[in-house]
Amino acid sequence: MKPKDSPLGTTLKDTSIPKRSCVVYVNQLYEAFTRYREGFDPDQINNLRKYVQRCMDDHFPSGSRQGNWGITGLGGSETDQKLLKLSACPMKFVGRPNSDIVDAPAPPQSGPISIFRLVRKC
Image (tube, rainbow, N blue to C red; front, side, top):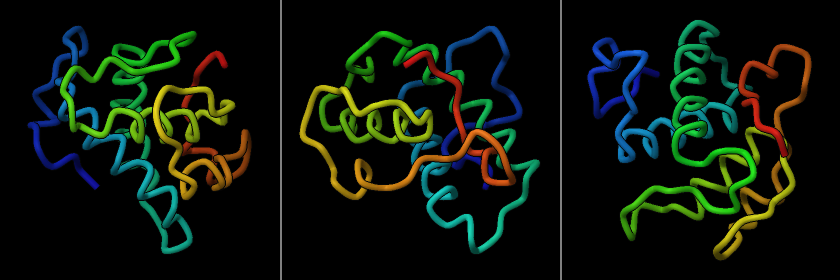
């Protein structure tokens, strides 16, 4: 589950992750969460979650109702919804709700699948 469109190993800790890559990472983490029953590698999920957490902190900080993805058609509203779901935050966002995301369960605070949960002040 290595992010596909950027060299993950060369991203520096003090640089911002490109917005397009962030959207890909969010989609990959959300997809892995929805398919966790099929099994997952905790080390890969931890690495991916760290990148998604950085993306959320940079482009959709706590208190924001809308992420700053910057490009029309990038799926910003759906990306915001996935981040809110993975953070177990109430769905307060700008845009049209995707019922598959809004109605899905969120990762729990504890247990094996809590590995998918992001940290966000709701």
